[in-house]
Length: 81
Image 1 (spheres, helix red, strand yellow):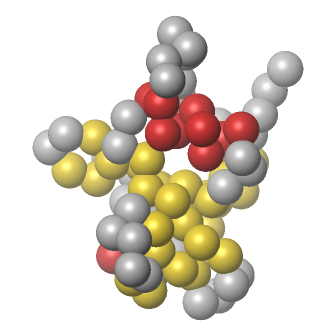
Image 2: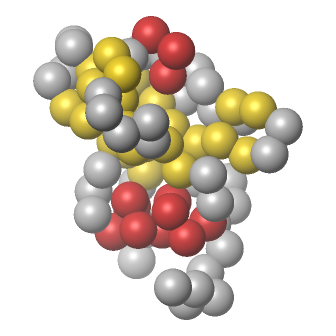
Image 3: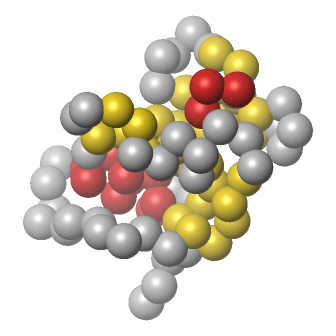
């Protein structure tokens, strides 16, 4: 699903101190678990995944081709109307 939305310069409502590499792996390679806050963190590799996770109020980490661009920024994106 592509709704034409491109998310740039995300503003995080909450920034976790954890890094993706420190989270506990799950059976799904795109979901890790934060032992501190007891929540799943969803890895977003494109705008579609990021938009879906934002709409579902998920904790996220962002990956782009070439590597983690926000490995040290795990958290929730602020939804602005």
